Image (cartoon, rainbow, N blue to C red; front, side):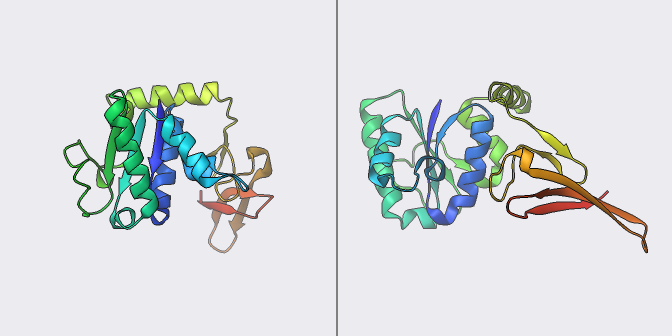
Length: 198
């Protein structure tokens, strides 16, 4: 399934999290951060994404309502959906901003219901078990190397700079006065570091 993720840049953290969840569950997601590289034609790349989607996922908010880019993407998606009835437009509301009249009759998703629930609804999963099976398959097919770091947890790369897991190392330290031990992971490329008491 190809999903075009339409959003305003102010809502990018939500878009990024939802996009990552959808990819992990096996969807092919068009997300500007992942598709438009330096030197690319922005309108050209948008046109590619808007002609190849199965699902147009509209993250709707006060920010999106004020965005000419989001409005243009939505108009293009509506025009395409009028001619290709196999495509779906799914609004996901992020705040109490009323959705545009043309998509108001469509079933909405709500961000407060959670990213997992949105992923289930978009991809047609009947709950957590089906989502986990799809994610496991995507991990296996993608040949991801996953390393678990004591004090941090599993990692496939640096969450700050995207370096591969080979650039991440574990660390540990002990507070001799309190007798507490801390551990975590750190990136040797950008210096990112996270962890906690173990």
